[in-house]
Image 1 (tube, rainbow over the protein chains, first blue to last red):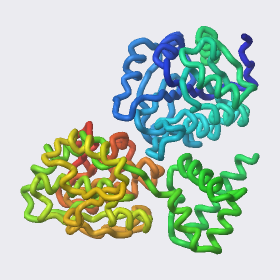
Image 2: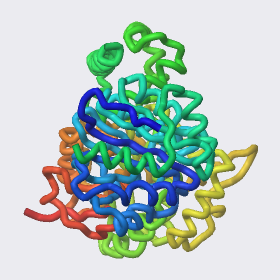
Image 3: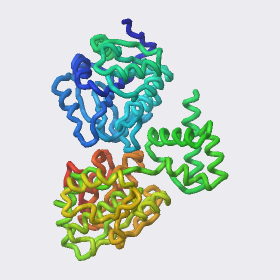
Length: 195
Length: 274
């Protein structure tokens, strides 16, 4: 699979994952080098009353700083932010994070679409968006928004995914997206941030 | 380019709403407001934000429909039970030393938090000496809050939350179920004043012992957050308490020094004297 060649330097990476997310993220994010220069924003579907243990789990395995996103927090390079349970995560045009308790989108809060669409708006063609494994349709509209704004759209190969529904829905909504397996995603991401 | 035009349209619409109706959303966090306005545009059947603006400027009946998109928050009773547990175990013992109390629920929306606090204060024996002010800018949300009627299918979650908050009674003691609805007891709102108040444009109206304002600040931009937090500080009695949402904090606020953390993990702050 050939990685899409960037037209200009990328500014951020956004990732959405649902069923099977933990394994998929463990197969990709720990591969990133300590000098990775882009911020990474992640939405994983987690039950609303569960504390997001994923950030601490990944912090133990990643060279980068991993944290739960805070409202109004300035987005820092080389940091991985997770949406808190039961809040949507959005990107403001000025490069800060925002949270909301708006109604669930695609039955989900946090919703991948909400993050991806707001990030597409804020970052335009500098954004790289990934939709990974999952068993619902969240992220499809968001990935299309990223592509329409000139960003790079990547989908985990449905045959490689623990749950194929979500990546397949994203591909259906955004046929121009590049499919990759997790290994290819890991090396592609590493290549992005070490520029 | 279409993108930039829409951003301009949103800015103009917010300006129009302020100048025509004095509803000021100009300093709301823009990413959320944009999402909501696009949703309103689609669901209300307009092709552009500008055409929606034309309509709302000339037809006041359109305003409440638009306000519903811009303001209404669906909450739960006892949302984040650990917050209410902290109020019960740590804050109310302090409040019980006062002969009379004032509590402000700022941004009370459809009232779930108002009834939660009323029940909490009843259980802890403080209700009778307390006046609650429930304020919001949306008149329809205020009316719903005052009615205190919720769909019965939401009650299971409310009950679970209430139990986790350390509830000393059964939630079912406080409502009557009929026709798929739970009607909360009138006695809960005897001491509640429901009132229109804007954190953006209005001022201090009473001296409070506790202000609970949860998941409102996340919708404001930094300058507006600062205004609201300053308003809260000025409204609080000496050593009064401020409770925010679980993901909100005073950390990025210019008023951070005006408060000390009282129960940090639950975002409960206490006014610090200069």
